[in-house]
Amino acid sequence: MVRGLPLDAIAKLKPIYSSLSEESLLSRCLDGKTQNQNEALNGMFWERVLKGVFNGTEVLQLGIYDAVAHFNIGCQATVKILEELGLSPGQYCLTESQKADSVRVFNANYKEQEVNKCQR
Image 1 (cartoon, rainbow, N blue to C red):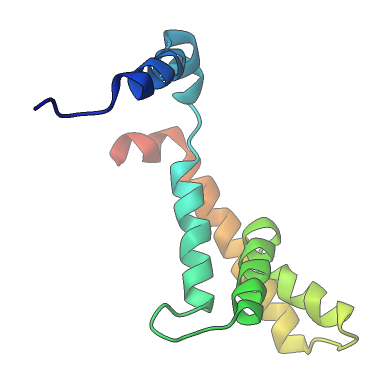
Image 2: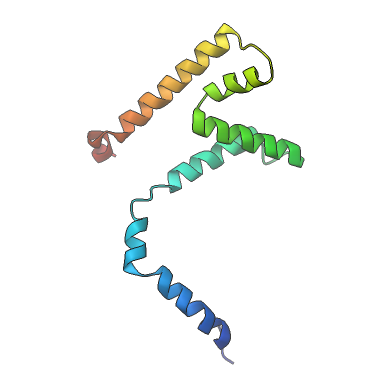
């Protein structure tokens, strides 16, 4: 008994596998550095929508929208969302969102410095 994929499936998959494993394509993927960003966005989503609780599609969509807004804009997304809803954010909301964004940018710049990369 022969195990594995049928020969016709192998014949169709082999050219795809060969093209995906070419050196020119693989060298372009080396500096992608998207895995941590994807994991960060995924983590932001699951902070908003808990896995252990059943959620409908509306809650899932709102969680995705909120996570993407915060990932792209930062905490200022909350301020912009409130303004779009016709609500005026309070002084504490404005102050804390600005503070959280500046801390986030400072930490990102700190981690990006070559000296700190070498230490890690």
